[in-house]
Image (cartoon, rainbow, N blue to C red; front, side):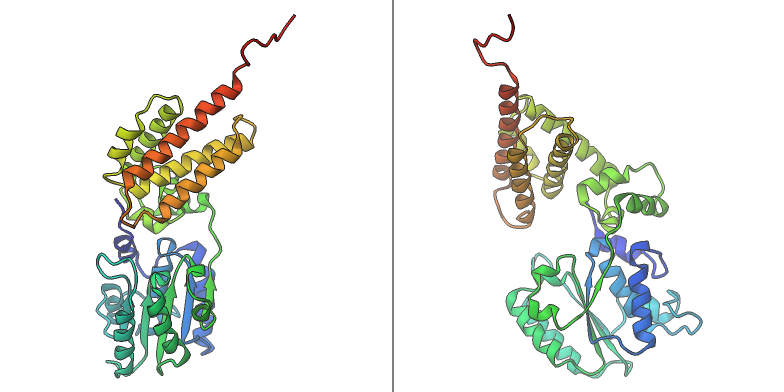
Length: 336
C-alpha cells in the first residue's frame, strides 16, 4: 500500500526538507573543516528522510560540480548516486523477505571495503535501517567501526537508535533532526503533490513519515481510515461481529488497520482529556498499549485475525462497561 523506496528515489537531491536543513548545514561544515567522522549515525527514520539525507551526503562527497557547496544533482557522479550505479557507494539493508541484516552481509561488506576503490577515492556505506542489524551482524560491524578502513565512511540510518547496541552508537557521530510538527509535514506534502489528498488523514495512519506518505496511495488510505473508524464505532455500539471482521481485516493492510485502531483510541483519549468523553482512561490506555504492541509484531508470522479479534472484543467490552456505569442503578430513588 506504500512504497517509501520509490518516493525516496524520486525525490531529487536538490529537494528541500525543512526539518533536515540544519543537519545538512552541520554536515557541510564538517566536510569543509575536514572533521567528518568515519561513521555517522543519522537518527532520522527512512520515512522522514534518513535515507534521503544519507544519499544526499554521499552525492555531496562524489559530486564533480565546483559551483555549489551542495550536490548539484545533475553531474554524472550525482546521477550515479541516484541510480545506484556509483561503484564506491555500498548499501546494506535487509535482503528480500528477510526482516534483518545478517552477519554474512556485514562480512561481505568488510571484504569489499578492503578492496581499492574504483575511483581511488572514498567509499561510502549506507546501512538502513541500522536497527535491523541482528546481534551477530552488529558485533561484526563493531570491528569495522573500531578499525575503520582508510577512506571509508559508514552512514547508519535509523529512527529507533535504542535498538542499536550502545557499543555501536558510541562509535558514531550522531545527527539528530528536530521532530517536525504535523502541520509542517502536511504543508510540505501539499507542495510535493497535487490533488485533494487529506494528508493529515494519511499521516494519521502512517505516522509522521512524509516520504512514506508520498509513496502511498493516499486515497486508499483515507478510505481505509474512514472504514476502520466507522467499524470501530459500530463495535462500540455492539453492532459488529468481531470474528468475521477480524478474519476480513487480517487478509490485507494489517499494519495499516492497527494504525487506524491506534489513532481511533488516541482520539477517544483526547476527548476524555478535554472533558468531552466520560470514559475510564486506564482501560483505554491498556487497549492502546495492546494495539501498539500488536503493531510491533506486524511483520512476524503471527495469527493476525486472532490479534484483531482480541482487540475488537476488548473495544466492545470497554464501551459496554461504560454504558453500564452511566446507567442509574436499579431500584435507586433519584428524586422525591
